[in-house]
Image 1 (cartoon, helix red, strand yellow):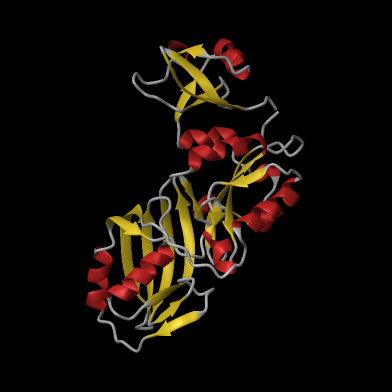
Image 2 (cartoon, rainbow, N blue to C red; image 1 turned 180 degrees about the vertical axis):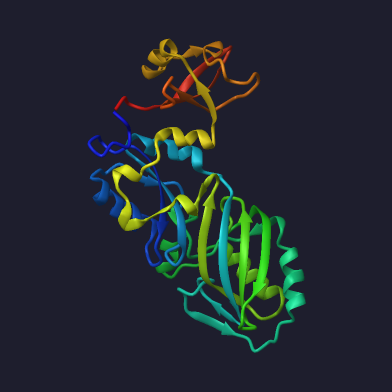
Length: 299
């Protein structure tokens, strides 16, 4: 029975186009109801104001989400110069305004300084944890705690003017963990005017793009991607029926049993049966052996 068969327990990956005003947790809760299962998780938070790609794991495929962390991302954003907020975005309260005209050339030059490996300080209203507590919980309690800068990578930061001299659009490609609202605030500070993010849309998470995302209310078992979609981010290791039977039981194998595994590769690998369905994810176990990290139950 196919993993995405609506008559089966739902299992797979789902690329949702998150609507504005919903937290990632809200989306998970809604999808649990739509799919009729408690086993739904997401691969990384997206701010309530933001829209766009949120990758979910459903059923046993929630165990595959660990392999989706660390993927680079694409965003389309809009920011407003001259106004700062306490959250660095439009959901916050205004903390400062600046009547400082900005030369577009200065803004473009400032954006170039934010491309490459840079250090960012996570905003207080974020899901980053310090001592096990998310910063946004501390912020709601009125706390402001010291935060260490984190190294992130911005591969692209392209700016585009709008009809409003203070309002700009941006296209961003960046590493996991990058805060686009911090980029907007840093741009504003660099040109002496301050700024905050007014709109954000995530258009890609690794190989999962907005063109395959489904609106939240259209989530259903039949729109799930099969678990084998994890092979987009892992090396695929197809096996024959005999090896598939051993993999199904989670056995440690000789490395040579996964014939497609390149020499020297440490894994993890998506082990696929003769029909191309995902059986398990294996990794190197040393001494010429491989062992499972995740074994999916047969549907």
